[in-house]
Length: 241
Image (cartoon, one colour):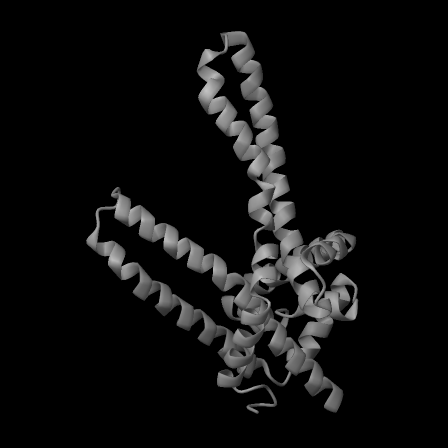
C-alpha cells in the first residue's frame, strides 16, 4: 500500500477485473444517454426526408415543433446522461441489474443534481482566487458523488465528507488522477496517428475517428470503476483511524 492506498498497479489490475466481469452491464448503463436522443433523431429524419414535400405554412409550423422538440431533446439527453452516471455508481454499490440501478438512480436524481451544482459553484469560487485552489478542491471533492450514493449524505455534507476522506492522501489521489489522464491521453495520441495518413474528408479517416470515439466511450465506465476502488480505499482508511 502507498500512502494507505492501493498501489497503482494493483488499482489498475482490480479495476480491469471488475470492468471485465461487469462489462456488458456497465456498457448497457453507458448507452442510456444515446438511447435518450433516439426520439429526437427519428423526428429529424422524418423532417429531412419529407420536409420538402410540405407546403410553406405547414412547413413553418413543423420547424417550430422541431425546435421545441429539439430543446426538450437536449434536456432529455442531459437527464439521461446524469441518470446513467448515477445508475453506474449505484450498480457498483448494489450489483443489481441495469433497470433496477436506473430506477434507484431516479429516486436521488435531483439530490445528485444539487450536489453537482454545488460542486461546480464551489470549485469556480475557489478558482476565482487562483487556479491552484480550484485544482486543490477539485481533488478534495472528487468523491462527493460516491459519498452521496454510498453513505446517503446530503449534497453539502457530501462535499465536506469527500474532503475529509481525501485529507492526508491528497497528493496520492492527485497523482492517480493525473496518471490516468496521462496514460489515456497517450493512448489516444497513438491511436490518432494512423488518421494522419488520410485526408480529413476521406472514408478511412472518418472510419478511424469513429473507432476512436468508440474507444473513448469504453473508457468512461473503466474510469468510474477506477474511482470507485479509490473511494473504497479511502473508506477503509477512515475506518482504521
